[in-house]
Length: 123
Length: 126
Length: 358
Image (cartoon, rainbow over all chains, first blue to last red; front, side):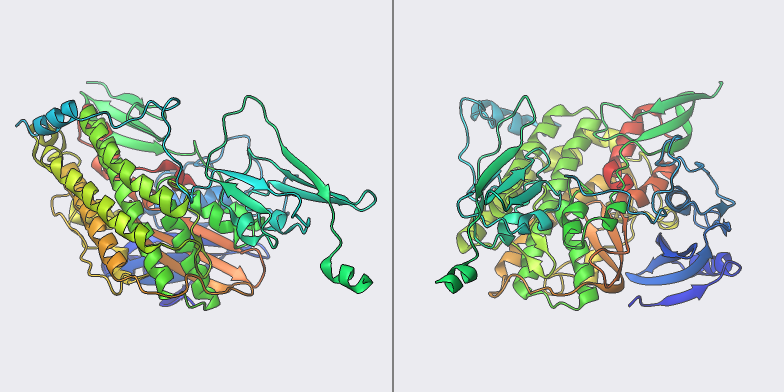
């Protein structure tokens, strides 16, 4: 269902992203999804002339992912957000908020990863 | 220079754009979603509104022993989207175009009504 | 002179919402700016786990307090595309009308706030008075001023009667007339130009590199507008993105000002072409698959990534709001500006912090 999709690996990620940059693509955002078994999908969206190109990266949540904030500075907020919500570490972040971009110090559970549906509908 | 002067003069000579609110009120628009009500006599306690409500502010309970049902809505959690009104099978839920008056304390809308026997069964008995 | 760190926000007279920026200042000139977010984070994406995909419409509408209708439209478009629902043409036109009305009132709100940021209170009041007309249209046609709740999966919930259409046309015409009366003040007044021209310059290359979106990007000379994707009724509507080349605060305010008038024109075009027919298609089953949809919001491009697995609850709803993309460009605009210009520059990206943090 997602058009223009390219699969990348941890090793080829930064190279592919640099290629995107030299191609004149604008970074839109990335989307991270927990797909179970301690794995997550990160989809990098790039835009050029209203056409999206997507790089799909499947990662183990406990292994650090190379940061692309060196290539696209704007990636730093998104990487910090994923760090907050999924506890995936990014290596070489330009500005690391250390899991405190949105969350407070006292928050210990990782919001998007605890698979227990903790909240019950209000009575 | 003096770009704003015509507007200022116009405003000086025309009447105020605001209303003296509590004394003078505008007629509400017909479609305005002001407040949710339930016509309890028509309600069949089917729980559809409870299931569809995005803010989960409606609770419907049935008491089979006494033959009554209760419809409770928390007006402070209600988001006035009128999704429940759209899905109500009997049309007992409706909205009035006047918004709720401010309240000093939290109160729940609680209504109790008789459970009517389902129509099919009523026919079968006859 | 020694460097001083001045905290800007989260509570500041020009900011309606809590954004915190640490400004490293030397001789009243900003050297560096470090943002801090997290004051209004609500975790709305997480709610997808306990609200089914119909109820999520009401949740995503509350992502933003200004462009709520366009959020739900984007979300519904995504779900419809996954499930293969054909939306009736009339519903698409109605969505276009409401989304353009939303853009108008959002831009009028911003123009007012922008005037307020450089201390022009009278102009602020003028814009907000005009905005009330659009708010009244929203209230009368949808039932609510901002959170319209008109979009459902498959179409819309409310219809426009012919009387309403002619009333909208006359109200929009009056609003356009009133906006044009104060055009000279916002675009060519000496004091306004002195505060905005050449302030917070973002070059075309910078805007592209830092991933700016919407009027911030178009104000720097890049013709990028998601309405060119021809969603809803934009395939039949005459539309050209508005671009200004300068990249300063003045260019961004001009883009928004001209877009307000353009939106009025788009509303008129959509009403003129409004076809007859159903306003909603039936929706059965649960979404399965993943989709990326994009729409143009008043603040810029908004991206939704939706993943469903055939269950009532969606696996993931990822919302990329325009302000989130506009914060890195803001960090590029702030260095080397004067401390007194900081509120104007921050306002010039039209920050919506509740959008950003969701």
